Image (cartoon, rainbow, N blue to C red):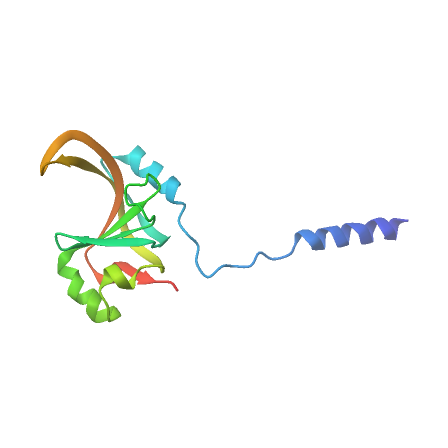
Length: 147
């Protein structure tokens, strides 16, 4: 009887000791990061973050990489590539960053900050706004493709 109990314990403990398979990339919890930037505003949250890029746009020379298809989505984080780095990105990746990073998992080193975005009407700023979480990238060393 003792051996049966001991054998049962060993079998059950072996079931719980199955190693967890490591994935090739660990994504940053986007909502948790957004909450942290809200709590720390106007300061940011420094770190190394991993995201999947779903959409991109270029405006006034800045490339915006977004974690959601709709950049206005509350769950979206925007990675903003400085205009002076665009040529370096094209040289490094062989394509424009707003095209190259779509549907790729990336790792970004920087500071996530809450940014106020003003609504415009007829080209003029209104009294309405919302917040986005941005990470500014000033160098190709701050961002890399995971897969």
